Amino acid sequence: MLDNKDLEAEIYPLKNEERKSQENLGNPSKNEDNLKSTPPQSQLSRCRTVAFFLSLFLCLFVVFVVSFVIPCPDRPASQRMWRVDYNTAVTYDFLAVDDINGDRIQDILFLYKNTNSSNNFNQSCMDEGFSSPCTFAAALSGANGSTLWERPVAQDVAFVECAVPRPRGSEAPPSCILVGRPSSFTAVNFFTGETQWHHASSFSRNSSILSPLLQVPDVDSDGVPDLLVLTQEQEEVSGHLYSGRNGDQIGLRGSLGVDGESGFLLHVTRTGAHYILFPCASSLCSWSVKGLYEKVTGRDGPFKKDSLWESMFNATTHRTLSHSSGAVRYLMHVPGNTGTDVFLVGSEACVLLDGQKLTHRWPPRAAHVLRKPIFGHYKPDTLTVVVENGTGTDRQILFLDLSTGDVLRSLALPSLPGSPQSTSLPTADHRSAFFFWGLHELGSSSETETGEARHSLYMFHPTLPHVLLELVNVSTHIVAFDAVLFEPSRHAAYVLLTGPANSEAPGLVSVIKHKVRDLVPSSRVVHLGEGGPDSDQAIRDRFSRLRYRSEA
Image 1 (cartoon, rainbow, N blue to C red):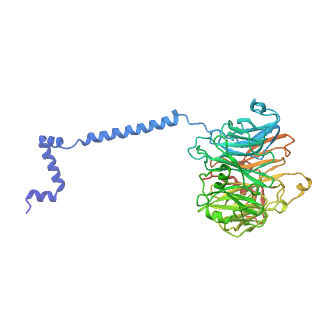
Image 2 (image 1 turned 60 degrees about the vertical axis):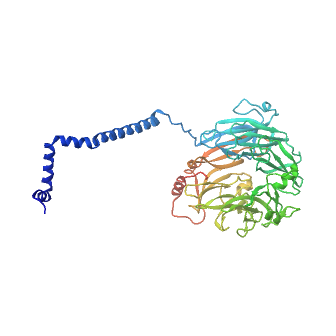
Image 3 (image 1 turned 45 degrees about the vertical axis):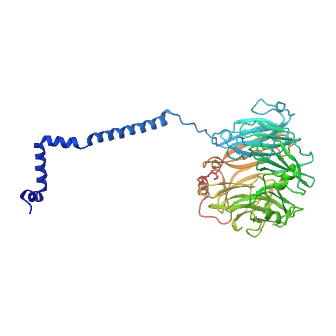
C-alpha cells in the first residue's frame, strides 16, 4: 500500500513539486552538485545565437557587396531601328548572323563591292593586293549598326559559306570560306575579319561552284574537319577536298562521272556511312565519301560504306529512280526521332523520305514548287514544312504536317517575281511566327503590269489562322532578307539588304534592321475569308503580345 506521502503526491502533484523545490533550496550544496553535473545549456544557447547573427551579417554583407560595390555589366542598348548606307556599290545575296562582339546581341555580316575605299575604315582594295573595285566583308553591330570590322576579302566573289561549324574543343575559330573570281580560295575569321589562309584555287575558269560547301570528317588528322567543294564543268561534276585548317588541297580533283545541280547534302546513314546526295535531273544521285576520297588520294581513308545504299544506287551511274514526278529541285534534311530524314522537293510534287531506306513516309503531295520550303511549328512542338505552291497571283502557301503530309492550312498570297525567301521564328507558345513577302495589294496584279514592283512583308501566326498582318511595304530592290531573334527570347527584328538589281550598275546599298513589334501598331490587318469577332485593334494587340524563344 502507498504511504501517506506517496498518496498525497498522487492526489496533489503540484503541491508535491512545490515541496521538492523547497527541499532543493534548503540543500544548496546538493543543488550545486547537480548544476556541475549537467551540461552548460545556457552557454550553448548563447553560442548558437552568436553563430546565427554572425551568419546573417555575413550574408547581408555579401548581398551589399554584390548589389552596390561590384558594378553590374552594362547591358548594351539595342536600337529598335537602324540603317547603314553604302554609296556607289553593289551587294550579294548573302547575310550571316551571329554574336560577333560578344555582347549577347546577334550581329550581321554581309558583302558589298565598292569602287572606292571602305566607308568606315581607311582601307582600300590595294591594301590587300586587289584592284579597284573589289569585294569587302563588313560586320555590323546588331545593337546600333556600327561597324565592328570591315576589310577587302576578294576581287570578286563567286561563292561564300559562313560560320562553318567547328567541333567542341577545337581551337580553330569559325570561318567564312570565300571562293573568289578569278581563282582564289580564302578563309576569313568570322569574329575579326583576319585572313586565316589564302590560296589560288584549282578550279577551272569554265567551272561553276555548286552549293553548299560541305564539311566532311577530319581526313588529314589535324584536328579540324575538312572541306568538300563541288564544281561543275559542262555536264560533269567534280569534287575537291581541302584542309579545313590551312586550305591545302588534299589529293587531286575527283570526277563524279555524273551531271548535277546545286542542292547537295552530306548525308550520314544510320550505319555511320557518309554519302553525298544530290539532285540530277529527275533522279537522285549519290556518291560515297569513301569512294571519292580513295579516288582523289589513291589510298584508304577513315570512312565506310553502307551495303543498303550501295545496293539502292546503280554502281555505274550512281543514280536511283526519282521519288517525285518532275525534276528534283531541292533536298533538305529533316531531324527525326530515329535519324535524319530527307525532304525531297520536285517541280510537281514533294515527299518525305526515310533517311536510311529512302522510302516514302507519306504519299507525294502534288505541288508546283519553285521556292525552297521552310520549316516551323503550326501546332505546338509539331514540325511543319511550309511549301509555296505556284507563283504570281496564283501562289498558295501550304502548311504540311511532316508526320502525315496533311495540309494544316492553305493561304492565298500573290507574289511578285523575285520575292525574297520566306522565314519563321519560334514563339513562346511552341508555335512559330511566319514571315512571307507578297503583293502590296492582295489579289491585284496591276503592279506587275506597270512594272512598279512593291513588295509587302506579311506576318502570320497559327493562333490567328484567318488573318495576315501587313508590316511594311518596300519599293526598292531586295537582295536578301531574314527575320532574326537578336536577343534571346525578347528582340525579334527583320534585316533587309537592298541594292542595285544589276551588278554592273553601282548604286545605293542599304542594310536595315527594324524591330517587328514596333511595326505592329501601324500595320494593316488583312482578313482571309471568314473572320472572327475581334476588331483590327484587338488583333494588333495580340500580335504585339507575342513572345519569342530561342531555338534549342
